[in-house]
Amino acid sequence: MEFDVTVIGSGPGGYVAAIRCAQLGLKTALIEKYSTLGGTCLNVGCIPSKAMLDSSEHYHNAAHTFSTHGIELSNLKVNLGQMINRKNEVVQQTCDGIQFLMKKNKVTVFQGWGSFIDKNTIQIKGETETKNITTKNTIIATGSKPASLPGLDIDKKRIITSTEALNLPEVPKHMIVIGGGVIGMEMGSVYARLGAKVSVVEYMGSIIPTMDATMGKELKKSLEKLGFEFFLGHKVESATVKGKTVTVVAENMKTNEKVEIKADYCLVSVGRKAYTDGLGLENIGLTTDERGRVLVDDHLQTSVPGVYAVGDVVRGAMLAHKAEEEGTFVAETIAGQKPHINYLLIPGVVYTWPEVAAVGHTEEELKKQGRAYKVGSFPFKASGRARASMDTDGVVKVLADKTTDEILGVHMIGPRVADMIAEAVVAMEFRASAEDITRMSHAHPTFTESFKEACLAATDNRAIHI
Ligand code: FAD
Ligand code: NAD
Image 1: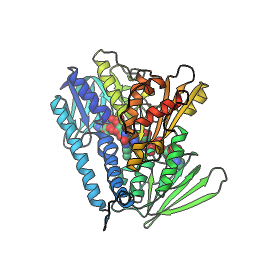
Image 2 (image 1 turned 180 degrees about the horizontal axis):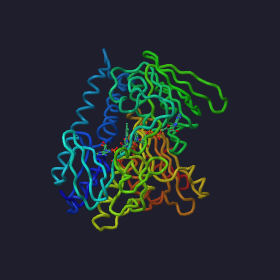
Image 3 (image 1 turned 60 degrees about the vertical axis):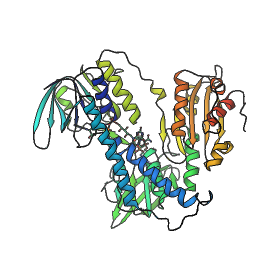
């Protein structure tokens, strides 16, 4: 069988690339080693984690805020098994949707392990048979797997990754989270809301350390209200399991003091690493960088003409929507178009409560660049909409060029900011000034007014409601 394009891996990078290739009239194959399509994102990432976040948030609100709203409940309890069943149904519906889209777009799907025999021959090793297909172009979209720490044995029962955290048999009494990044804060929130004590051990001096520092500071305050405990600036030395107890030893990097934390579960969320095992890269003369990532040029092409790579397996943010943009980009490049991705404007979101969302430069980056900037901030406690819904934690922070007023970065923590950040992306794509946003009507009362108010604050300190 001969194809114009073969995509290896069916995550958001791979399946979007396959659909776009098919839309452009290219004969396309998609190879996935698992029986369900959708990759990390749909099976064990974005979708199931958001399902668990939504369910646990309902429980938390029922337990803690409903009575203030005048809603009385008795006998409230968590049914974790049902919560996980619902999550599994959401995952199944979503993955089935991708199968449907493959059929609709006439993409040929192969289940099996894809690997290079040579640049134009891909082997597919299935459970019962192995076959080869020939292809003019190949897109590597094999994604990533959880990373670990040296000397730390992830037994998947007590010391777990996000994958096991999505299917625990019980609500932990106490969960240690190693790594205060996105997965740690999201999955930690799920179990803290369901009643677990959560202790976070983070190497850096703040949580979500790659985001604007204000976000980490504000999120920490909100999570502390939820009962999180933080050991920042601590390096994990060991994690050991004895019976049902995990013991983590970490060193305070300033004082060299050691802390020992005991819990029934330990989630390791210290990042993810690119996945290229068994892909046969060596058969086409490709090597990976020091972090195991496939090297690509500005067109996402490897050093082998006709072999491209997208998503978590290449440099850049490990995000589903970044992978999708790259999948589309490569499909259009193969079809002879000249697409473009503005990497600065790929938003980042943390689905905690309050949510965190950002696009563009952080204040720390602007300082480092020596760029003259101004800041406008608006706290959600001054928003009528936020008071009505009892969601007053958080702030919107707008960074704009001091001279031209062009928006350079937007950082939000608060209710529904995961959705609100889209306005900032559009504004920045069209190179709006902060004043441009202030001249646009925002429906009242909505959370989005807070973005307008922050832009007003950045424009000669003109915020109306603070
Ligand atoms: P993947 O989704 O990892 O897909 C790669 C696929 O390739 C897999 O299905 C794998 O089985 C297959 N494969 C690998 N090798 C082979 C081979 N040799 N042959 C055949 N098939 C192969 N991102 C967001 O943007 N928003 C979120 O809310 C979010 N939440 C997340 C929550 C969790 C818990 C995790 C772990 C991740 C989350 N992410 C989120 C990150 C997101 O899942 C990834 O960035 C995204 O899935 C990357 O897409 P991809 O297509 O590059 O790779
Ligand atoms: P991350 O990079 O977000 O966070 C890892 C954290 O671990 C960092 O804060 C880092 O400083 C810390 N760390 C590293 N080594 C450590 C050590 N020895 N001791 C203590 N702390 C240590 O990674 P993650 O949370 O594992 O997530 C993996 C990827 O998945 C991320 O790139 C993220 O983009 C993606 N993801 C995205 C979302 C989302 O978009 N909402 C959700 C989940 C995951």
